[in-house]
Length: 419
Image (cartoon, rainbow, N blue to C red; front, top):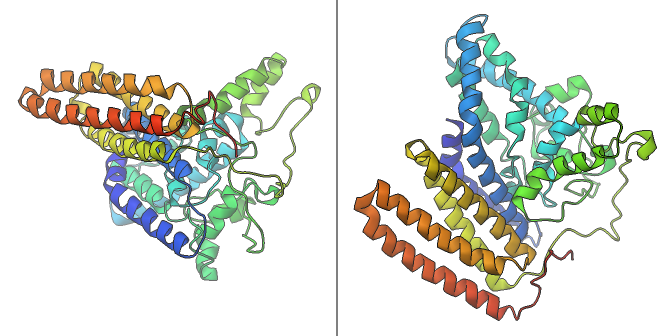
């Protein structure tokens, strides 16, 4: 249910981002960068796909606890929805706070903070794995007796609410609203890497939790806020964005004693034992030397990457809509093709040399996968599909080849540039 509502909201998301982009351009504010925004959207799309893998199990656990161990069954009414939303936000506060204070959770949640911009596209940049790791924190809710439908509605409302707070276009609101409710001002503080703002304002909707538990910080409008994570990711690779911190934890653990290996899992991000230098101190960003991660990509490659993103979006929506009808074989095949498309889209923005070979291979695999699927499962649509996909294949091959040739073979390095 959660994923279905998010899919229905996609047009509204794009309209809102379009309005925000228009406003920022009109006022000569550089709030959007193409590569960053596309990367945010690709990461967010991946989160929706991975939720297909996790949600059956997670919702099954919720229903099992509700049906067998609920203290009392609360009827699904408007007031039970309000109570469930409040309860959900309370447990979200702790899931979110621990997502910043424990390595194991930060490894997943950090994905949401990696963008060095702050705009509505950042709201859609969600971790592929954090919900699965943090779900246990929400399990008191079925014990309390909230109906699974009410829980799902509260989760959707909670998620959709947080979209609008990822913007610079809205300043501070009325003091009463700022006191009780999470606003863009409060959430800008949360995304800042200025030392005084770190690990503040964790609530999703109600700021009362941060005020109660000592993590509230008001935005100082005189401050120049720097967004992102304290160690720049320097990559547009969606899979690496979701796994790099786990890899780094593993690498650090190789030089630790066994007790410290275990301690690191639940220690604060940046913690190291004394014999490895001790905890890392976050310093103020040096504005004279700091540069956002970027890469000088050929315009035609940018156009091609954006086009592939919208193809990816359409294909992913169809995949999620018909997921239950597919055989396991095609579920896996299309999932892998979508994942490969995500990686290549990011690699185009990074100027990776291997895209020249990988993209041609991907286009062939998409042709084979799509047409065999329709041949075996929807034979009545096969003739239309093979004609339409062949036309699309020729167009993609031609434009991608043209983009490569007009790039002058410049910038196609084995690693992205940082400029």
